[in-house]
Length: 317
Image 1: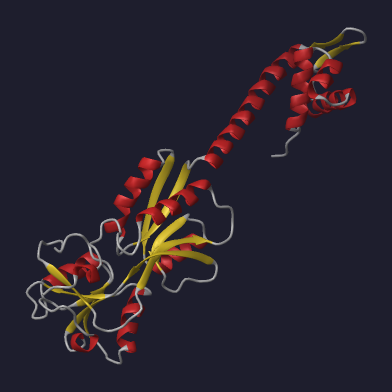
Image 2: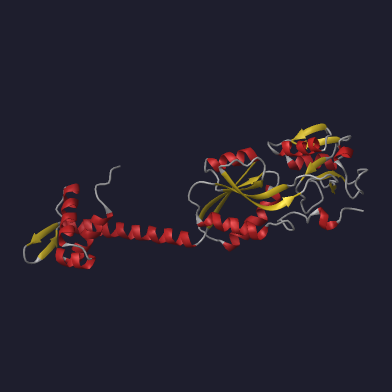
């Protein structure tokens, strides 16, 4: 649709209609009389109507069409003013839609508490959530389907910005009744002789298998599982051990059976939990506010929904 007028023309017309004079309108707007007269003529030509009856000495009189046009013009200018006010408000405050992506592995553990605190501080935000694996989250950031993602530092490309917030060391996850359950730590060489349940998600599996490669041992993979909750239940029921980086507050699997987390004796690179965003494009206030909330809430010693680091507990006797 091609616009047949400009907002400036409308503004000049409204001033002339209110003042009943081109001269008075020009003084009100602090512009030349010729500019006001030209704007009115352009509107009349564009819409094919006569807006004013021009009197040589007595100024202007609105026609019937002109009076209706004046009413609609004032309504239009009021809407535009409202839009400017809304935009200014959004620039000052965190308001409007926020699409948050979260790595599916810890979404149910971390995100609800994080969201609750953020929405309490920013009631004008319209929150929506997406849960996916790492590769899919990165794709959604690129396509602007989500604004920000809470995820790991796994294979972050150059077009994605990543701010690390907390280090998550890998640990062994075993059933409460397992022979290793009372150990303070366990090595990958010891674990490699036992059946393993592997978390089979893009990039996550490469990270965990890379730990074995760095230790020069090969795990015995009994089963590959893409659902973290199913994995925990399989481990709790004695089908094998697994490796993980997150530790929910509850030591129970979904079926109620208990698990134990053991620190790895091996030196290894921890995963970094952080916030990812697209590097390019305008960054609304709402995204900056969410990043600030994450920085204030997530750190090496405290993550919403997670147990304290194992090193802080000193392991199990």
